[in-house]
Amino acid sequence: MKHTPVKVLLQATSIGNMATVKGWVRTKRGNKNVAFIAINDGSIIHNLQCVVDPSQYDEELLKRIGTGACVSATGIIVASQGSGQATEMQVTALELYGEADAETYPLQKKGHTLEFLREIAHLRPRTNTFGAVLRVRHHMAFAINKFFNDQGFFYLHTPIITGSDAEGAGEMFRVSTLNAKNPPLNDDGTINYKEDFFGKETNLTVSGQLEGELGAMALGKIYTFGPTFRAENSNTPRHLAEFWMIEPEVAFNELEDNMNLAEDMLKYLIAYALEHCYDDIEFLNNLYDKELIARLQSVLANPFKRMTYTEAIEVLIPNIGKFEFPVEWGTDLQKEHENFLVSHFGGPVILTDYPKHIKAFYMKQNDDGKTVRAMDVLFPWIGEIIGGSQREENHEKLLTRMNEMNIPEHDLWWYLETRKFGTCPHAGFGLGFERLILFVTGMSNIRDVIPFPRTPKNAEF
RNA sequence: UCCUUCUUAGCUCAGCUGGUUAGAGCACAUGACUGUUAAUCAUGGGGUCCCUGGUUCGAGUCCAGGAGAGGGAGCCA
Image: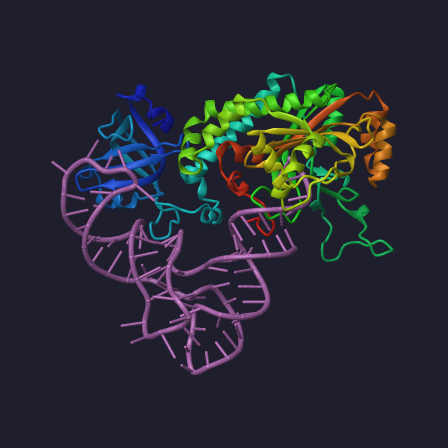
């Protein structure tokens, strides 16, 4: 018999229907007269309560249907006599697909720490928490594509294996088919990558931005959304070695347009989450973060505070006594400074026009000779969620800056040609997908918003 | 990578100043209970005290080294 999602069976319109449900047992309760089997199939955070008359079934079969078992139940959907749910199933047929030995199945009915669940990442999607997070993650991925598609952007697939090591966004993972124990060598003892698969040194991408700019110089408005890799030895709740990044790039946009796009996108995504994932967000709000829903609504209700780096420094200096690290014009902001600004203004802050020496080579230089048209979006709780800029479109200025910063120009000849042939103002940014999910779910560790996290010393599963 | 805290039953933890046979709750098993909501009650089984070495009559407890995890910082998204 065709089965119906729990999500549908829980609706009052299902009452009176014969149906089959297939899923995993969350709990079983009861006595010798009646048994209650709560079944979850992942379609929604709630379970379907299946009511079983034990006298109608083999005692051994019922015994094997415990927490974690996979079953199929058929019966009529009725209004629930209990108070915890609107509907339930009066079971007439029960089939066991696979049992889960209670002695060894690691997921119990009761509390687990998130740290323990990370050790059993192959099973944790079966918990309420990870079901909720993974559903939210799906809806956010879909909403990102929808947002950009609706605005006329094209989804550009930039390469995951990159031949340039000049993107400047961090340490890279080498991609090679050479024999690691005995690689071919040049006369001077260095590894001869001419014999490698691609005939040159290659790595996993740290950013699709440079290729994204190539797309924007033809299609006008593009975005990338794909995996990104950083081999930094970062051990924090906000960093992953493998994460997903969204990078829009828009021809003819200047910094102001870039800020508008970032704010519009973030608000669209948060509103989408509240509209389409409310059950899951409500669950996370109640279990982990009582301020979650209020914080999401607050971000939607207010414009992001926009100010220059220089103005931010002026706000920070009178409060210098509150900080561990010094504040003066020219130094990069520490996390404590960013946190101060966000709580001082009571919401997201967009900082622009940073000193050029703390930002990347491709950012557009301001006329003051000191700052560049950079933009960071700082969010409550998680800090920097977006980093972006208007790009330097002047070939001469870009080349000079690359030389100053020792960026090898021969590696990026193709990037430079966009400035030689039909250059134009353009801007873009990068949004860390998992950081967005952190914000929307209220989870506090980035390892808990991706199914199988990759971090230093950890690539299990 | 740096600072800091932690590692005891399947899970979450207690274990005092080093002292006899290492405890609790939950989970699990068995039984009871006429509709439960993390059901309840009774009984029971369950331990490489992270690893290696040291100090001591004696180490879960003290010391050294190592591994793993959490929090904070840096790097960034």
